[in-house]
Amino acid sequence: MTIPAALLARLAAATRWTVLTGAGVSQESGVPTFRDAQTGLWARYRVEELATPEAFRQQPRLVWEWYAWRRELVAAAKPNPAHVALAQLEARVPHFRLVTQNVDGLHQRAGSRRVIELHGNITRTKCFAEDVPVATWPETGEVPPRCPRCGGPLRPDVVWFGELLPPAELEEAWQASTTCEVFLSVGTSTVVYPAAALPSEALRSGATVVEVNPTPTPFTDQAHYVLAGPAGVVLPELLARLWT
Ligand code: BV8
Image 1 (tube, helix red, strand yellow):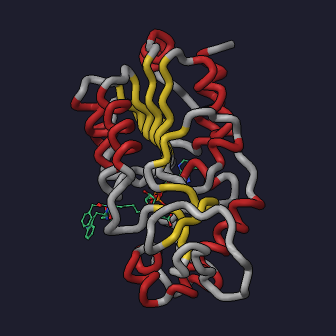
Image 2: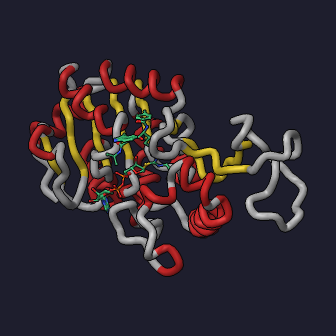
């Protein structure tokens, strides 16, 4: 992987980094990306058809079981060198912000201490009616299980299409994107808004913007640098070139 000397110099001098990650960062952990075609049981559904409140209202059992399947897959997955490199970056860079679209919690399992989760976390559950977290519930065999307080159906604590992002996390991500010196957009197809607007916001605010992705995205032409490789290879290489 050739990393331009000018980029290495810029990164070495920067004390304020913001990194935005997408499903590509977890791809090398065996977690399928959204661009990957759905497999097996879910092959006939598109993500946009399942990850919506309407889908849950119409087919609560199907949507709950899709997330239960993804939760098991994520629980069995291990953080990969990309997640580890980002945790190491957090320890080395004075002002480091990690913003993720991922809901798999692998950044935290790799040691990242501060993760801005724009789209929630699949390991957390909340009440569909009250929109408040629910940690435990009586296992009655009913699917989806019911909220112990109001009896309404439980749902995963993630942001579905057509739902607003958590305001605090979105504001923090916006701040992190408009005040950083360098912005890395890693493993995202840059198509889902408002998260997909963050790289452009960083560019507009004067940051040096780097895209890390093996394939081009709608943002590729605007990035200052493109490191066209898997995050699990590029990010450890970047650290090795900066700090050895
Ligand atoms: C919102 C959590 C305001 C759930 C996700 C019409 C009606 C309603 C809304 C809209 C509409 N039209 C547009 C919208 C807005 C909509 C949107 O942007 N839609 C898109 C499809 C056009 N956005 C929303 O609805 C958002 N809310 O706008 O609220 C509102 C409210 C009402 C009405 C209007 C507006 C909410 C969006 C959040 C949805 N939730 N996830 C769950 O996970 O189940 S989105 C999900 O997909 C991800 O979180 C991520 O954000 C998104 C894209 O996924 P990526 O992470 O980018 O992954 P992807 O698979 O796409 O790409 C992987 C990339 O990795 C590829 O580029 C690949 O090349 C690369 N890669 C592969 N391997 C590697 C790699 N890179 C590095 N290393 C590797 N090894």
